Amino acid sequence: MTVTQTSSTPVPLLLLGRGADPQSERGVECPGDLPAASDPGLVERARAAKAALGDRVFVLGHHYQRDEVIQFADVTGDSFKLARDAAARPEAEFIVFCGVHFMAESADILTGAGQQVVLPDLAAGCSMADMARILQVEDAWARLAEAGVADVTVPITYMNSSADIKSFCGRNGGAVCTSSNAKQALEWAFEQGEKVLFLPDQHLGRNTAVLQLGLSLDDCVVVDPHKPGFGVTDEELRAAKMLLWKGHCSVHGRFTAESVADVRARIPGVNVLVHPECQHEVVVGADHVGSTEYIIKTIAAAPAGSAWAVGTELNLVKRLADEHPDKTVVFLEKTVCFCATMNRIDLPHLVWALESLVEGRVVNRIEVDGDTAHWARVALDRMLALPGSGAVKD
Image (cartoon, rainbow, N blue to C red; front, side, top):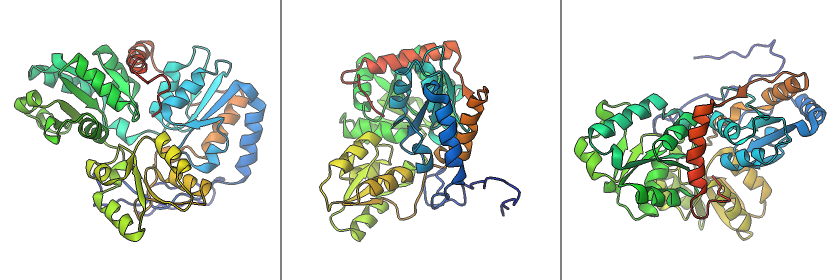
């Protein structure tokens, strides 16, 4: 298919998807290099709009956002940290979340009634979160009931999930987790029941259960919403301890064991640092594994002259390389790959959102209904009650 850029467009449209790698995990697309920066004239418009709004607006920037957007963030971080930062600023009437949809939902759940959350582009979703729909999860729960295991199963959902999935976990005795406290969440869950239904990222669930809790790969089965009976027999459901939802991150799922072997051959002495959303073989082959905040801190603390191959989103890897010129910081895969949905938040959308607020119009407001928000908050509060989770990060 040929896509033609219309010459009459005042601000160039950035085409995020230009191809896919058939060798990568299904649903993992790799568009190539980063899009070009937006019209530099928009920088002044964004600065002027933000200044006009003053303390009425609080701009949150996720680590995976492009630099042209990050420069306008009042705080940067991972999704849950940003949502809590917003809740700590009750004087801010408008929360502009430069991230993806589920993150803005979490901010709406945690902020006050007088605050309004704005997502500059409603198309900024999350492929992982979209892999677990509430009707699918409710059908899977009914499947567990048929097999006689629902009453001994505790649902745990990763922060990277929709508000209604978090709410489902809250209503059914479960909790939320982040990549930094998944171990504590699973330990808590196994104190409540015999099994865990882990949503929506199978890789984080498997890596945590096997590498941190000491379970075996045989203790894990994959629950596939696209297969009859969810792809598992009653016997398999009864025997397993970890019921892993078939979901994954479209960026982290791209890395392979071959990626690790290749970078070690190309860069002698390289340290391989990856996110636990990566496939099990990648995590096993890495030198260091941890959350986005862990990755940032590890690179910052590394000695000058050291070399690092980082398995996470490209915007962050490039930013780390720029911030630490005394170290070699490279993307784990030879073919660059950024989060296409996260990159939908660009400068044109941010300017539009901010200028609309200046004009008195709230655009793209994200609102979670009261019942969903209540039970999602129950699941989040259970997470925050876990040991060491008071300052939890994604």
